[in-house]
Length: 286
Image (cartoon, rainbow, N blue to C red; front, side, top):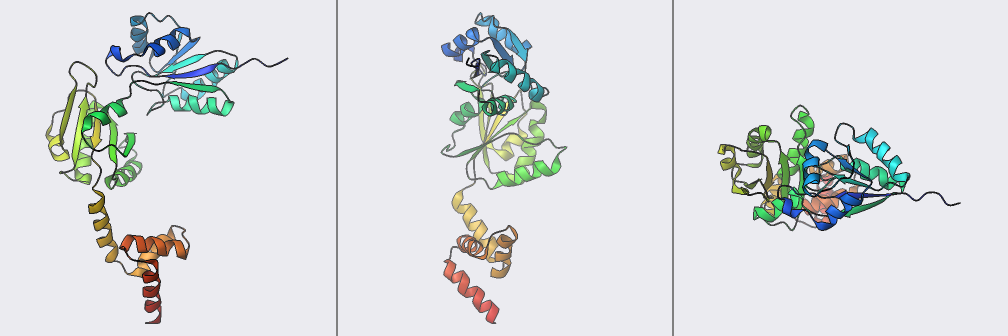
């Protein structure tokens, strides 16, 4: 006798503001699911009532994501179909839903995506910067985790792709001030607020100007990446101040072998690997 067939997990996007963005497929999936796992059932009940969805809900959020995910996996293995939704937008994107999806994949449970609104993508389409490449960082580590936060910000400072961050309203001004100090007051940014809603607003300005702005509500921050040529010139100038041996030591300390380190040094300085080898040989013979 064959075992019972597992149910499916439906990762279901919901509107980030405008209820007209709810897809017919999302409504159908939520109506037909056996259970809806919602980030905040109090918020989601208004959405479900609007579309006359009577499916039972259960709470699945940041603080119960591990133990509750195990419970939901058991229900899925028992044949139940479950839809997961977040307060607004697409689950798993800077959201505890990623834990449930990961556990479902490990358990061999089928995961289906019901795509739709996403604050990240919406902000990118509005920012006016090139989005051929972008980095989504979500919420920065809290200030209490100073070292982690500094590490992330230093990595992002020289990022050449467009950067997308989330920030809570009461932290926005401090975060913009921090970004301005590290990235420079002339770096261009877009503050996206009330996206898809009646009072949608996109403020395109420099970080220096953004610090002076009085925030109202929740924003998605989009920051233009660094100019690639400018960054390359800056790095090359910095490396040229090092001796070749010191430069090699940087990469050797990272675990590279001498050939890989030589190749990296040559790329940094805009010269050939042979030139690096010959120069190091001359230094040793001197």
